[in-house]
Amino acid sequence: MHSQDIRNFSIIAHIDHGKTTLTDQLLRKTNTITERNMTERVMDSNPIEKERGITIKLAPVRMLYQDHELNLIDTPGHVDFGYEVSRSLAACEGALLVVDATQGIQAQTLSNYEKARALGLKILPVINKIDLPAADPDQVGLDLIEEFGIDEGDIIRVSAKTGINIEGLLQAIIEKIPTPVGKDTDPLQVLVFTSLYHQHKGVIAYVRVVSGTLRKEKLHSMGTGSEFVPIELGTFAPEMTPVGELHAGEVGYIASGLKDVRLLRVGDTVTTPNSGAVQLPGYKEPQPMVYMEFYPIDGDDFSLLVDAMGKLALHDAALQYQSTHSHALGNGLRVGFLGILHAAIVQERLEREFDISLIATSPSVLYKISLITGKEIEIHTPTEYPDPAQIKEIREPVVLATIFTPKDYLGAVMRLCEAHRATLDGMNDHGKRVKVSYLLPLSELIVNFHDELKSVSSGFASLEYEVFDYQPVDAVKLDVLVHFEKVEALSQIVVREAAEGIGRRLV
Ligand code: GDP
Ligand code: MG
Image (cartoon, rainbow, N blue to C red):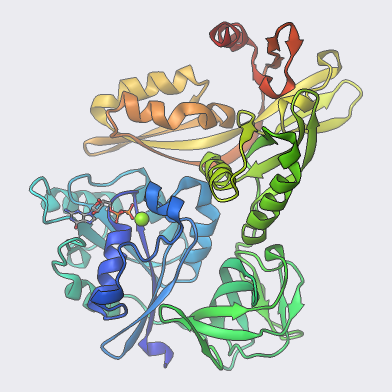
């Protein structure tokens, strides 16, 4: 396929605005998947993803439509996976910004828009769910124009569910999303936008060829330094389909034969040795935000737990873990996660798929502590908390949280933030809504903040966050005594002024 006939795009949306439904509908209309083998929600393949209605693993798909190759690169729909989203977007020239015609612009609409814009993508605004009686596409259209300064003529109204105007949308994708610019003859630059582990083919990287021609020859990854000769190259049609070469502009996969998913990571650049190619921008190592300890209820299950975690980590480069020991609970694992959803999913899989009953400590963030000796330490869980007499300063991670709320709920949202030690960073008017940003301690966010935000705003306020900084905090360790004995796994690190209240609630 010539690059002028290729369109690479993502769908970005606030949760529940219809990304999965629209994807299914595009697959139907392009006959990529026949009605007969169309299972609902093709893209959400993991059972937990299906139940929760979120996509975690990205599954790209190639569609053929009117002599064009349309590569849809799906993005994970949760704040825990912001980096993965940004790398998927970097693999595209355009994005469909899907907005629910009954809900209008929400927090993730804004943050996804900003990410896509920052990467220079052409944005096609799609107003979805126009079949619903409560739909107000005219108002949502005006909001989109006002908020993002987009052209009225670019707005496409569809119903992903009933199929209204999906052909119009496909036409717009071909007409308005730019063609890839890289040349086949340039040095090879291949962007890895996700990677997973396959029992026989080793690490499989999902890739976008940015420039050059990808062949089954010796390859080199610039971020991790891995070298390998691919055992297979292919495209997503939508099953993995082997091909001989992948050209500039194309999306496909490399089966690397590598045995560890950490050797070929999201955001990495693959090239040929000594190609002289420049590393693509944006590569980052995964950074855990939340830590938990897992202990098997039956101590004999510890080796099962280690084995199970090893299997999950094989597929998940962001999962970090190491052995730990608690006096009361025996051997366990300390695990680092990208966020609480990531943690919940891992815990659920351990219990369900591997049938291990667990005791999990409450999620904790990484504290940085300066000791009076001048030494700097990092603590992941309350068990590592040093002797308080040795502490000079404790610093905690703070996030920049962006909340989008209808004006009616602004007061309640602000009171909630203040109750969680947040400091106001900025406020902007957006028609009937307000965007407020706060510096919010991550430890406050991971407890119950999101649910509380939904509850004080009748479900209308939405939240996005990114790591901001470490800031000093007056925190103490709260120990819990059971029958006059300290149970380490129940300890928490809390702010001093809240310690007494929390202690009483536990009793
Ligand atoms: P996602 O979270 O963005 O992937 O959203 P989903 O595709 O899972 O859709 C969320 C809900 O909205 C589901 O119950 C869908 O059936 C429903 N939905 C999606 N698109 C439409 C539409 O065009 N019309 C109607 N009536 N419902 C829709
Ligand atoms: Mg979805």
